[in-house]
Length: 100
Image 1: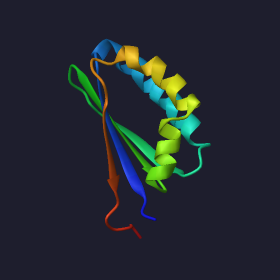
Image 2 (image 1 turned 90 degrees about the vertical axis):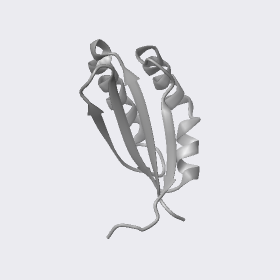
Image 3 (image 1 turned 60 degrees about the vertical axis):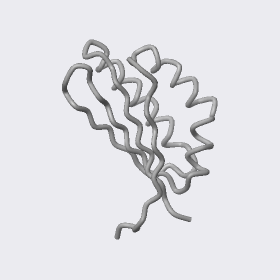
Image 4 (image 1 turned 135 degrees about the horizontal axis):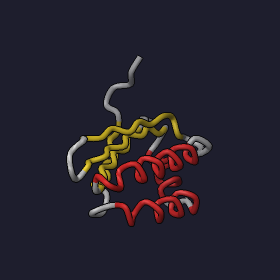
């Protein structure tokens, strides 16, 4: 079973960028208790609109998909969507070589 990286890019107006980062922090805190979650990081390009990239590592695609469709994630996502300029772009990538 190969670990996966989930990349999600979101575009947000500069005025809403801190609110988005706060919501993403809540989302990550909730993910910490989910089976299969390994780690995550949030990167952003400081331009307007602000592009925010979240990279999360999951033990498997199945673990990610269980979290993606969970009630907890969907509720938090409902708070995030009004802050965005468009639908987030999501890519799931299988890790070709394990680190270590």
